[in-house]
Image (cartoon, rainbow, N blue to C red; front, side, top):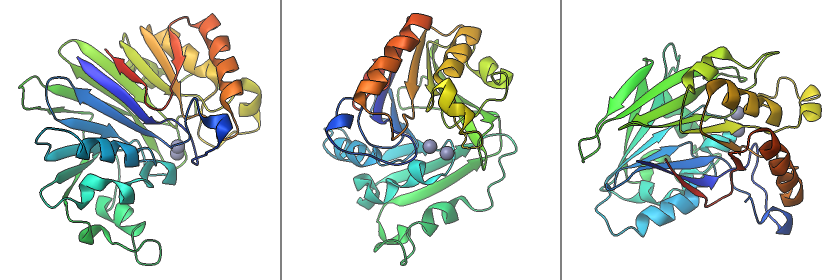
Length: 279
Ligand SMILES: [Zn+2]
Ligand SMILES: [Zn+2]
C-alpha cells in the first residue's frame, strides 16, 4: 500500500483567512508513506512541510531518515524547509532528492543553502543540525528499499514548466501513484505524462486555472481543470486528485469547480490540507 497525505495544496504563495479554511492555505507538500514502516517520503517542501515536521516529531517511532524529493525548486516548493523541525535534530539524516534523466543541476546544496544565507534567514543550513545528503540522480528511475524489504520504484519524467520540472511515478507491490505538479501542457496534453500516469491507481495533477484563466496565464507553468481531466482519461487512471490551487480561488470557487470536474471524471476530488488517500 501507499498512503498519501496532503500537507500543502496551494500554488504559488500561501494564503490564510476564513475563505480558505476548507482547502487550506499552505503551499505544496505531500507525504508518501509506505505503510507498516516508519520510512517517510516527502514530495516538495512548500510551507505545508512545517506541520509535517511537527507530526514527524510527535511520532512514536524511531524515525531517523527522511527522503524529500523535489519536482522543481520554485519558492512555493522549497520555502518551508527552514521551518522543518526534524532538520534541527542532530541524529536525523535528510536525503534531498532530485531524480530525472538529463536533469542538469549544478549544485543541489546551493539551491537550498541560498535561501538560508544570512541575508534571507537567521540560521544557515549547516547550522540546522541534521545531516543532509544531496542526491542528484541522473536516471529515469531508481529503486529505494524501505526497512520492510518491499521496494519502491520511482520514475521521473520531465515536463514543461519555466525552469523545468519533473513528474514522479511511485510504484510498490502493485500499487501506483503519479504526482505531476507545476505542469503547463501545450495545445495537446503531454503524451510523456500520459504514459507516465498510465493505469495509475491515483494521479495527483496540477490544475491552477480554468480554461478561460489559462488563456491569460500562458507561460506561468500550470494546467487547467480540463487538461488535468484529459490526462486522467487518456492515462486511464482510477482516481484523480487536483492540486496547486490558485491563491485567488477561495473555498466556494474550488467547491464549485470540484463539482464541475466530477461531472467529467467521476472519481475526482480536489486536494484539501490534511486529506489522506490510500492506494
Ligand atoms: Zn508551484
Ligand atoms: Zn513552479
